[in-house]
Length: 163
Image (tube, rainbow, N blue to C red):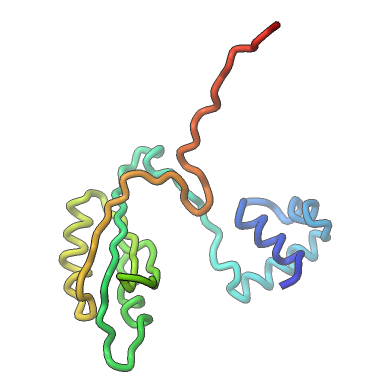
């Protein structure tokens, strides 16, 4: 990957709404070059999606998030991909990750209440044939999401000190 492409990706990762004219100004490329690179990156699926990070708590929606770690028993001739595919098809599942260590897979689940998430895990996840055990951790507060600090303290307003 060349330096210009890396710069475009980093700029877009920071702000998906930035227009090609601004990217061109930041990278020293022409707008046409920027548009061509972005089109290539989208077709190659290097750019997978343009996304908005929403602070649902600030928006007044009280979703409950939980991180569930799973120990799985793999089926013969099937790797982790098969169980991952089953897991990511549930709309409640927001992310699926293969782990090293004590657990094999981590999923992040969103629900409207702790009870709803607990029932989802008990009825949908724990009952899958490949799942041996689960460990559920409810998210109490998110400080940073996708590289964005959500709980930035307000600027301290100090009185001007005069000599």
